[in-house]
Length: 202
Image (tube, rainbow, N blue to C red; front, side, top):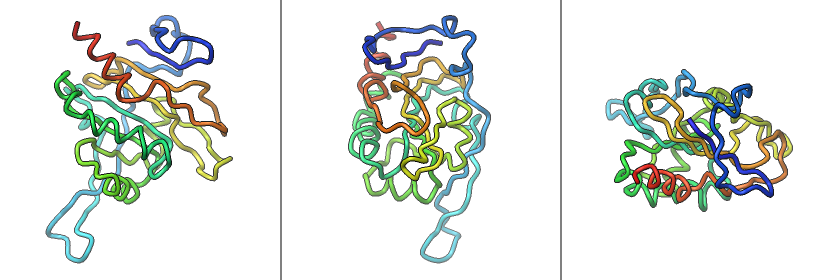
């Protein structure tokens, strides 16, 4: 397992291994065991909202699969909507060619908000996972306070590669902290992850 964390005045290509951060709880080997509360279409449901609740576990998402996860602060927020998620959607087939089974976007929002956000952006390839209680984000040590923006607790911006539940690679934006007055976006983008996957193929 290895990580890249963006650090001011340090090249973003700097590679850190789990051994170098052995004493730090920030970097994990496995994704957390959580249950995502999702909504799925069900034609047997009457009325204008033909959806029902469906629990989806971490095991169902990650077991036996090669998964790319992008974590971001919130649905409908500027960078998340203009660049971060759309780029992963745009390059979805490129990820598939490199052996990725699925791409999941995780945000501390409820299922209704995530659905409407994906619909507004025309996203139909990347799967949106509502982490409404922040349990997954907390489990990968990416949960931060954004009370200064009236957001409560949200995910710090990151991306990661997961194989059969094991975290193989993380790209974490710089200066992770509570109540940040900025929103760095330099290493968790789609092209950085694509380049990493291409390097692994060589």
